Length: 313
Image 1: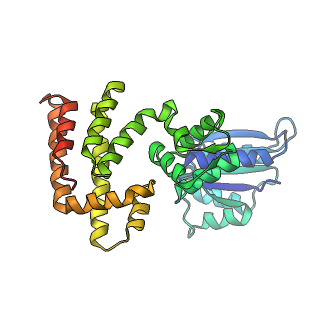
Image 2: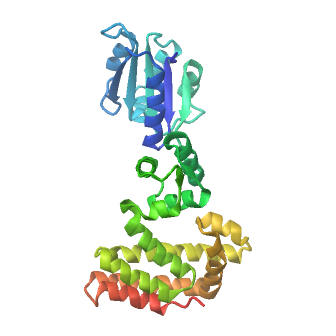
Image 3: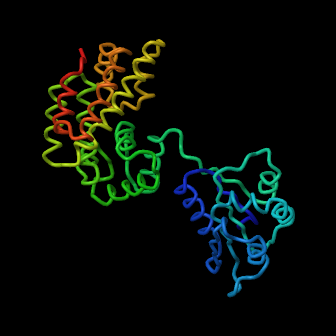
């Protein structure tokens, strides 16, 4: 049985919608759902919906989007309602934050439930659990790390990609080949292989990967600098953590280096470049970016010359 009020609190819209769907599933089949924009809604209209019966005799769920704005505008009156909420309807507030020291937090917790919708701290673990529980996929940690690196922290897109991979006939166990073979990841994977070669100190292989990428993706010359910049930032962090005496395994975990056999080579690259080498490379890459954007030389060749100039040994 649904409670009179729920607060779905967190920045991640995907998690909020997942929790909302679960609430709707637990409601009787004839329950009426109303979605209201909290930025424009008036309190009187929302309260009228909560206190009136559904047209066809079932229960009612009133969902207020942008609940932070709604609560801010009508806090005192809303607190009075929550002290004695309607038993015939459920109010769902979708909020970005709800500090525990606020009175409305205590009222919602007493009359209903506050549901945490914050993004997971361990994204790879979330991918593994989501793949198993929702999509019937067995996913190893390294594979989940690769997926997280390629897609990013957008849980909605991650779930969508997991669904597509499940439908692609992977046999239930997801491998790196399954991921790299999908159309959605092919371009990202090729760039990722290029920066992996740099992490291994293999400039010749990085240049070969770069040339291959340009043959299949003409936009790569505009994205390559961004990816190399991200790689340099990882090296900078690696150098800084080495300086603090942090163990290689912990550095790899922090920098999300999913291929364990590449860790020693990456550590050697960090030692070879050092803090000064990384700063010089960043300044040089900024100049390459400026030249490419102002028409000085060919953008793709500028990137290649930059890679050939790196001192990784």
